[in-house]
Length: 390
Ligand code: FAS
Ligand code: PHB
Image 1 (cartoon, rainbow, N blue to C red):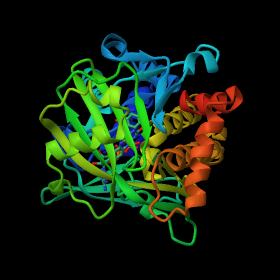
Image 2: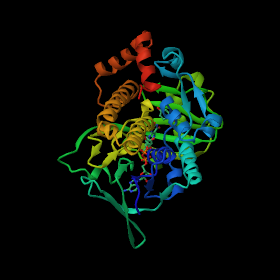
Image 3: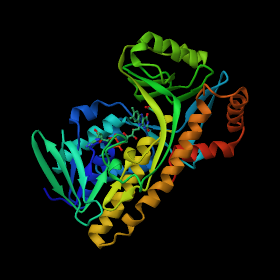
């Protein structure tokens, strides 16, 4: 096969980029290791910033999101027995976020690729990248016993943290930065009415909790658990009881529980790799960076990577200018490091760190006191949560 841009990974990053490029006359092939059903079975992000929703609309994939998604103007932080609200819209001069599940937007992207006749190769095994420092890179992959080859101008690695793309950059070139947290998030999806119309992030001495949602009949809840926990240890009843312990009494009393339709533990890590470009390989999304989900930055950071890549590749093919691609790594890293900072700050603010000293625990509670005593501090939180400019 010959194409202009070969994209490894058919998650939201790879699909959104291929859709935007094809709508602007750039030919792509997407190689996805899993089946479409498997990709759509994963429950992940839930909050989209305006930059991401704009990109989805530009890709012709915003219609169901605008119909079924919920625009949120604020969220709550429960701490020390009280609940305070972050008024995102008032603090950011009118901005808001969209609550619409990653699973749904990925489904919308797949259906849009189908309508446009986009080429997405599923069950592409043993993907390997070749000649990345030449002007004629290529990608091979297996379908059954057959080895196929895709010749292209550029390879985009949108294959997530465990993908092959980042690992194709020589170790002497790649600089990795990482912070692993001593806990994970146990998440439950349930067909129940959400306990609150807006998200509630809870700092509790037993650990962090989050009340989120996908719709008015689909709730998403999380509790912080030790890394040593396994999902088998957590019955639904044990989860609901623990969640209630970590919420203000009046909220816990209104919690509607029900059977979990998905239950999983996600480890938390902060990770970023530099550079995000090596020769004709460009990394996007989780292949280059991971954040703890506390700040809802994960999928949204993938969005700005896709935006920069889309603009740079269209300029390359339409105007013959590689400037956007030359500056891609620098621009994407500048915004991603700010997402790393905010995600680390929100995680440090809201989680119980087992090795914290009493002094550090008091400092954390003081940080919350200061936050809700200072409009400037709340503005700083809000501008990051709704998304810094691209
Ligand atoms: P993805 O990992 O989504 O997609 C990469 C794709 O590449 C996958 O489909 C994979 O099958 C494929 N692939 C991997 N290796 C390959 C290979 N060698 N060849 C071909 N294909 C290959 N973010 C939030 O904002 N909020 C959350 O609550 C949240 N929860 C999360 C929970 C979990 C368990 C995880 C892992 C992430 C979570 N995230 C969350 C972050 C998540 O939403 C990511 O930011 C988002 O999936 C990034 O999308 P992609 O970059 O497309 O990577
Ligand atoms: C979610 O709904 O899955 C969600 C929302 C906000 C976060 C993390 C996860 O910060």
